[in-house]
Amino acid sequence: MIGIPYRIMRDSDQEGLVEKTVYLATRRSGEAGESMRQARRDFNKHNLAAAKAGKRLLSVDRRLENLPADDERLDALENESEKLLGVIQEQSDKAQEAATKLVRLSLTEVYGTNEKAGEIMDMLSDKDVLGMVLAIESGEQPEDFFPSPDRRPRQTSTSPPGDSPPRPSSEADSPGPTSEPAG
Image 1: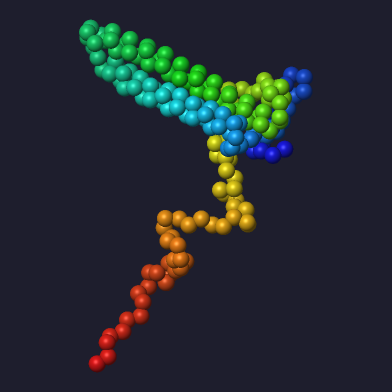
Image 2: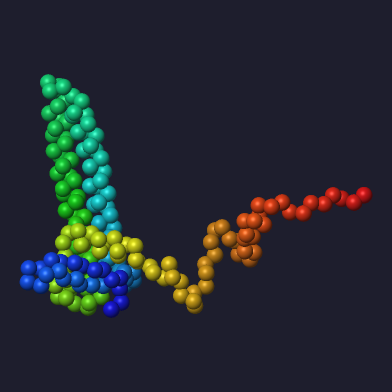
């Protein structure tokens, strides 16, 4: 199988501790690649929205703690707190849905059928799905980390074309030879 290996551990009553390795695709081209990128963008967008709502909730809760029990702003802040809890839950659910979609697309890409991907998905917990999303994100372009020998290195903004390689730091730090004009 081509893909990123991901190990799943389950404790089964009938079989005891079961370990299974599944493989995740990181395809970046074609229709499947675009679907995976969109699911990942959705996952990140909803996670960010939940985190922002969580920060606002912490701020509201701190203000609630500092208000006296008879303050007129108490009801409004409690309503805002409840609203923010709803936003956090909604955004977290949407992030989980996007993560599940991304993992299913990845598994389908490796195993070739939605049926086989569904069997694997049935074994996964929400925590497994989130771990797989992280594996997919961090392993998207292994060739970036391990360039193939036939690929030429790209020029970077710090090394202009035709520039000589940088000198070792011991040469760069020591002053060059000094001479005074003759005469």
